[in-house]
Length: 149
Image 1 (tube, rainbow, N blue to C red):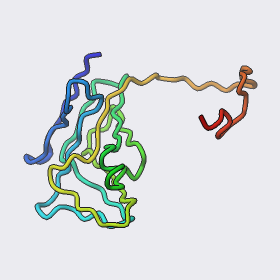
Image 2 (image 1 turned 45 degrees about the vertical axis):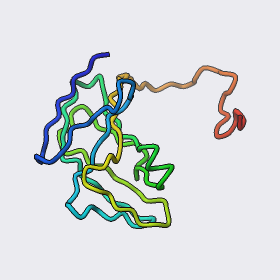
Image 3 (image 1 turned 30 degrees about the horizontal axis):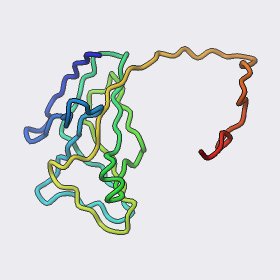
Image 4 (image 1 turned 180 degrees about the horizontal axis):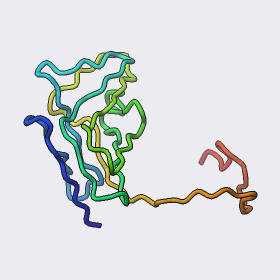
């Protein structure tokens, strides 16, 4: 699927999203910080600038911001909202909310890869009221109902 996303630098020092390899699903988003970086205290949160805004080709796609596995696993740094949703009509700066789950302070450096951006198709669902839903083998069994393995 070919998809062209326009990217506007809001600051000349901002870096464009970059797919690290041809097989990368997401493009890295880079922090735009002051020279001294931004302190993310232990168990604290911060909103980090990327210095860019995007224009998606239309409402048939969405941009989703995910955490980077290396930061999460090695440092305990993840997105504060789990997944960021960037709608096709948003034109503001992409900001990344980070949370530090570790017991140690972490300094976000300028130019550091802080998240990844994926562009995915959107199904324009129509929601209709219903008096009943079809039966399935699972039915209404919820959390953990399919077992642990």
